[in-house]
Every structure is written in structure tokens, then in C-alpha cells.
Length: 316
Image (cartoon, rainbow, N blue to C red; front, side, top):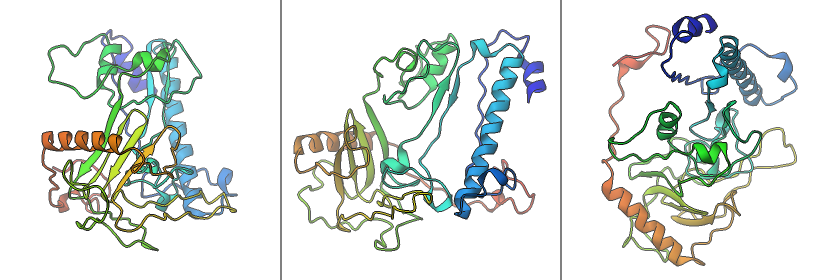
């Protein structure tokens, strides 16, 4: 990586954008390296997951070392992020948050990440601001602008990251999916993979069809509708004294409101206490739904099966 990086850009004055999508901690868990440091982890999937995280960590270190070796680091902004929470079925975890990957609970949508750069005005600080969609920020850092483009959903959040200012983003639409089916439901007590259409709760479908799989956050408020996915709290295997906490919500419940700042574990539903907030967020969901492109899932393409070549790669 180092030689390639050097030969391609060391003499160039053009801003560099380098994107690496690591698959290290996604299934299948296949690493056979770094076994000894994690031999004490008794859970097999968790132990395997830890080894793959170590491999990814080494790869990130190789990249940052190469940038420093060839004199590029002083003008570099490195963003490390993820697109989902931990998958408890494959060694991941987001305890004490609720849910897991493929859900709209915080355990499924709240990602971890960091930004490292000599250009940061504040270093070693923690941010709780809403940050989503990096395009405008990266364009700004490269000396460009987004004037004249189509309307963008992203914001330039560099001052929020570098200086600790408030993020210009105050609202985040997590998803609206009328065709959602959960491939990994909590089959122990709740066999739902989607939600029935009947409604026996105070909220009707006047503002928004609350049977739809959807979630939105505005400021400190987060609203979920429909079936958000497996709703348990999953402790990591290392916490032997903790057991899985099952949700006490009735199977037909299809609306929740949380103060996500004070209650990031999503344990205290406030929808009955703050109906005006519910109405506002339902109206926002309906606005986004009316403006959205219809959901379309194409048929599976057998040409993408890596069995023929032994590798994953482009096939279309």
C-alpha cells in the first residue's frame, strides 16, 4: 500500500480522496490469525470477531503509517466510521443499547467512529452531535464547494468536529420501509418478522401509516413506528452476570417516543406523555415518505455467487 500510495500521489497537488470499505468485521468470520491474544474469550464468535477487529486495526495503522512516511499526514483528515451497530448473532455487540444490526433501535443505527488529523483545532474530545452524510464536509476540506449542485441532504460539519460547535444537522431520518421483513427476528418470544395492520393503540394512521417500519430523530426526540426489529438488550458474552433483557412491549405495539439524550437505551416510552412531539414527528415521516422514491428490491442475481470464482467481486 505504501509504495502504491507514494507513486500515485506524492508528486501531485490534486486533493486526494481515498475510500477503503473494510469487510473485516462482516460475516463470514474467517480469520485464523491473532489467535493467541484472544484465547481467553470463551465465546467462539466473539473470539473470532476480536481477531478480525485486530486485523482491521492493523490495516488502518498501515494506512496512517504510509501517509506519514510519504509526508502526506500533516494535510490529511482520516475519518473512521461504520454503517450500523453490532450484529449479536456474529460476535458483535452494542450493549447497553437496545437491539442489534438490522434494527432501528440505537443498537442497530448508532455507529462508532473517530476523526484523526493534525488539522483538528480540538483533539481528544468526544462529540455527541448528529453527523450523517460526509460529502459536503469532504468537499469543503478539499477546497471545493457545493454551490450549483442539486439540493443535498448533507451538511458541512467540520466546525462541529474540529471546534466543538453545534452540528447544523438537527434531524435524522433513519428509514422508511413499507416492505421491511426481518430476516433475523427474536424467535424466542416474538415470532414477528413484520407487523400486522390492525391498530388498537391511540395513534391512528391519519398523519402517517404507523404500521410501517420507520424511525426519525429530531433534536433529542426519536420516534419509531411499525416493527423496528428485534427489541431485546444483548449483553456481551464477557458479562457473565448479565442476561439478555427481553422487551416487555406487547407484540402489537407499533409506536415509541424516546428522549434519546437522557435515555439512549430506549427503555422509557414517552409517546403518551408528549403527544404533540409524536404528531410533529409523524408529520415529518409523512413528508419524507411522500417525497421518497418507491422501495424496490431487485431479484437475486445468481451471477453474484462467488462459488464459481472463489472471490467476491463486481458481476453486473
